[in-house]
Amino acid sequence: MAKVWKYLRRHWMLYAMLIPGLAYIIIFKYIPMYGLSIAFKDYEGIGDIANAQWVGWENFTKLFSKAAFIRSFKNTVIISFAKILFGFPAPIILALFIDSLRKKGLKKLVQTSVILPNFISWVVIYGLMYAILGPSSGVISEILTFFGFEGKIPDLLSSKEYFREVIVGSYIWKSAGIGTIVYLAALTGIDPQLYEAAAIDGAGPWRKTWHISLAGLRTTIIVMLIFRVGEMMHAGFDHIYAISNNAVISVADIIDTYIYRVGLEQGNFSLATAAGFIQSIIGLVMVLITNYVAKKVDPDSGIM
Amino acid sequence: MRKKKTPGQIVSELLKLIIALLLTIVCLYPFWHVIMYSFSDSKEAMSGGLFVLPKGFSLESWKMLLKTKQVFIAFGNSIAKTVVGTLISVVISILTAYPLSLPYVKGRKFLQGMIFFTMLFSGGTIPTYILLKDLHMLDTFWAYVIPSAMNVYNMFILRNFFQAIPDSLSESAMLDGANHVQILTRIVLPLSKAALATQVMFYGVNRWNSYMDGVLYVNDSKLQLLQVYLRQIINSIGGKQGIGASAGDLSGASAITEESIKMTVIAMSVIPVLIVYLSLQKYFVKGTMVGSVKG
Image (cartoon, rainbow over all chains, first blue to last red; front, side):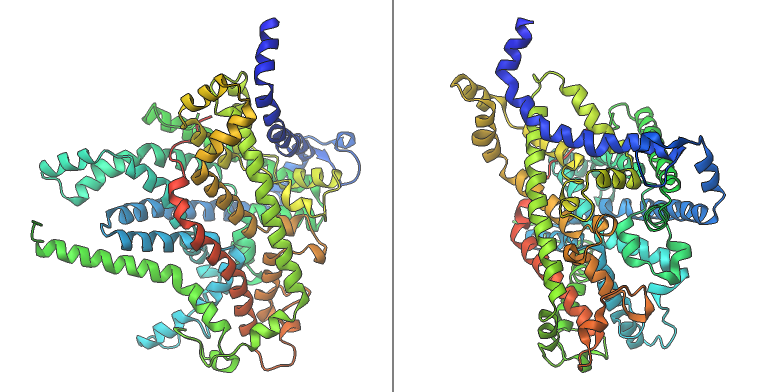
């Protein structure tokens, strides 16, 4: 006991420092987890959660009988999957490219430029897309016309056929640059002697990239991928809400926008929370699975 | 003496140069476009196409915009949210990351695990909304700041940075009788300038850009965020969910097109970000620590 007392007297300040952060985590992260219980209750948004009637899985069966939810679920999976498939390798390739630039000034110019879009909100990016891709006065249509493509320019921003391409494209434009930072930092950590040794052995630039750069990035890639997969069920409220409109809702409605509509606009708290619960559980399971697989492949990798 | 380049190398370097310049243009041109458009004459700009320079220089749309009250209200709210929110976030992150960076702190593993878990599982939108309602935080300024007070990922990045600082410095200060607060403020923080600049930037940008909280938690137009206001204006054409105050109110009966107003609003929201980014970017790459966020 005296030992504990002595330890606390010496280090109490450190524990005092932790108070705001821990209070935040408990109040704003753990209490909402308790709030998930309304997914199993009949709660209309009035009164205490604890007093609401338990209804078991009723909200979930109701949810899965709703076509709009099924649609948002499908859209979430499709959009997220496309974002990972095309968006995840993008910063890795970009980082390898930037790393391969030998001229300092050029390297800096590219790096500074590609990071910039990350600092712009989706609302503004939608505005930029409207300016560039818009069917009547957009730059793209102008350029296509210049090269002899007349007429047939689709309205990319309000057509269902191209919506997913637009989502993935704008996602890469915004996030690939900032994503390179982690990889570029990891690349600088690779011993230059490895490249020299490989060059002596006659390895060309592609082989060096494959066997040294990518091999050196492996751990970073795996950690980033695990986190990315964990966000699978969040296809990006800020992104979709800014870009979508009624013309594309059938391909654009994701679980996050569904929750917003059903929960906050229609006041159906329990149903929306059930949707959120499914989102969180799937996210957790995905992280655990990817982490497990990563550890099987390489025991040193993974996040836990 | 440099080795002479083979034709293959010259071609590949030229190719790289072209790709590099294309990437730069693709990333920068849209910003240039809207800024030039905003200084263009409304009628001449209607023809669209590339904007290398303004088409028929005019300040009319800026004048019109600057006469609108809601723009300033929304702009002010976003700035307040960004400044106050970033300050709170950085302070809390420092205070949390520092003790967790010290290996001798008892209970560290447990606390880290507890914090880390919130990255993997969350209560989600509605329970958080209910919590804010119970705390009477809805429709207040604090709804922008408190619910996202600390980003766990950022906090762990900062902790990793603190961990990399050699112990010897703080140990000798400890022997000289310094307490933990003094060590943090006089030794650790001055050594962490790059990391702190990065944190300010991470949080600041996120605060400035995110608007989900503005959509979910706040209805009061006096508290409206710039991004929410922009969304109304940008979406107001072609019947795209025009809500309340729209570009129509701005352009009125004058000769300025909605298009010009939109571009000007976008330019106005982009210019401060460009300035801040370009002045801080040198810290950026340096301050980001590599590596995993192992719990």
